[in-house]
Image 1 (cartoon, rainbow over the protein chains, first blue to last red):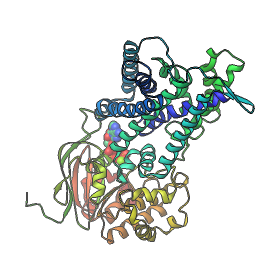
Image 2: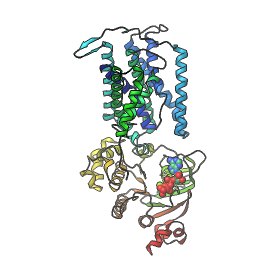
Image 3: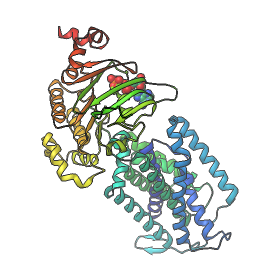
Image 4: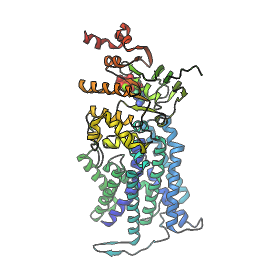
Length: 288
Length: 247
Ligand SMILES: Nc1ncnc2c1ncn2[C@@H]1O[C@H](COP(=O)(O)OP(=O)(O)OP(=O)(O)O)[C@@H](O)[C@H]1O
Ligand SMILES: [Mg+2]
């Protein structure tokens, strides 16, 4: 249960960007998992690889998030903004993201190798009992960081001008522009912020489990499930969906083999959208 | 260049524009709006009326031709920059933020000048008192007519000098349509020049100082509202069914 909450929070952090990017640009990013992996790899490289002078994991994690933000910036300015300008169709863009994901996974594999590796710090920790649940201290830290990040995103969206701009662009691009919002800037901010969060998700997942070149890809389906369950294009939906999917898939491992984790998550998803097609927080608007 | 009469607020000259590469929707469309005018744009479905407004407002790329605002070349300037220069726009569809309340919609309209809120809110709700009463209601739950009010109010928050309206009366009951046209005349009387695309051609021509008939991506006819109403060619091209009904 507690482990499910942990996975749920990590999923929520990692998928906010996926949902928001879809919300403001309509892009379904199949390479989103690679943004997650990117964060974990950078943190590993800085803290445990031995290639560069090692720095503490916390510092490496912060730098990884910053690097993730830069990676998101590059995605938007080098690739997706020019493609949007050319009016590339949605299907071609999806194919582009699938190709990009494949490319990045293989690049990671060449640079990092195929062996799963843990971070040096906090590798082996004994669980401590907290009332009915027992948890490793590092998982507690992961959960706390995840929860704080989500709270921060929520406040940002609700309270700041940029946050309101993001919600406006997600609602309707032309109308946001007609209200004086610089749509391109907002989209760039979403890429930067979303990719930074994905990188943070990767670092957190790496701390709890191990760092692998396809770890983000492994989470991709769960992230899509979270985003769709919560309501496509909404940030809060991704958060709620992430926590629920994480709980459902992890709790199921009490009875079922972990192999079925994704299957369980998808079953939850299918059940939920049969009842509420627009997702938990998605909207069904009256038209006219 | 200095020959441009200063009272011309908006000018579009031989604008070519479209969405998909290689497909021009506007094939050389011109329009001008003088200070204080209401200019109507009518034409059959798919003629490119909405596209013309979007091209002038920077939402659709202009491939050739010029758009000028008070004599300055603003071709392909981004929409948010035009808002800063005093242009307001109400789209045909998705004209409100459905998940936001009426008040939040109006605040969005003032995104660039949040400090002017109290003053502008009073002015705009003076025009649309209903919106102040129901300020907490979610815009997505409003009727089409109420949405149109919110949409026009949102566009007026920035105190624009020009307003582009895309089919403000579409889908409304005759009574609501009449209200909308009255409001537009009020807004115009308060000093806002208006370009209005309409499918209610007769009413549009009646309240417009001048109008354009758009057909297949270009301006086919232009004249004062009365001239166009009386022009048999216009009647044939576009007003046919409406005029027949009026007989
Ligand atoms: N987003 C878009 N992508 C591609 N083509 C479009 C798009 N929007 C409009 N078109 C095409 O442009 C043409 C003109 O459309 P436009 O909306 O400007 O017509 P309109 O005169 O406003 O019609 P209506 O009276 O139905 O509103 C149509 O053939 C339409 O199919
Ligand atoms: Mg139209």
